[in-house]
Length: 118
Image 1 (cartoon, rainbow, N blue to C red):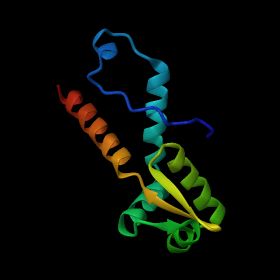
Image 2 (tube, rainbow, N blue to C red; image 1 turned 45 degrees about the vertical axis):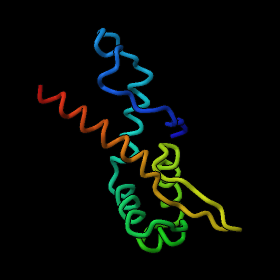
Image 3 (cartoon, rainbow, N blue to C red; image 1 turned 90 degrees about the horizontal axis):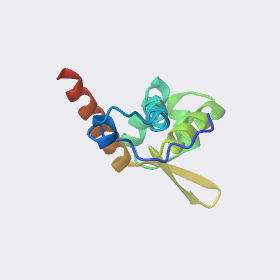
Image 4 (cartoon, helix red, strand yellow; image 1 turned 180 degrees about the vertical axis):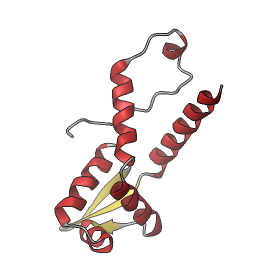
């Protein structure tokens, strides 16, 4: 998946939604962002980074017992969706959660589900 997910998640309350006009490009981007966390291994990576806030890919794949290439592919998806951020320390790249981004998604999903009940 080579899409860039850097655009902000659309608020359910934006004017374009109220007018009946749907921006399908933004919907597609939002769906890709949600798909990034709708995977069991990526959810495990997020949980691991919640427990240990700063890990290398080696530490992640060893703890999750997956191949390095698999861990790297899933970390790349999380990085494109801006759920994880990286810092370089010499040869090592350390991964940590982008908690404001995760909070943003939680608010969006909560809004979406609240509106679903109405």
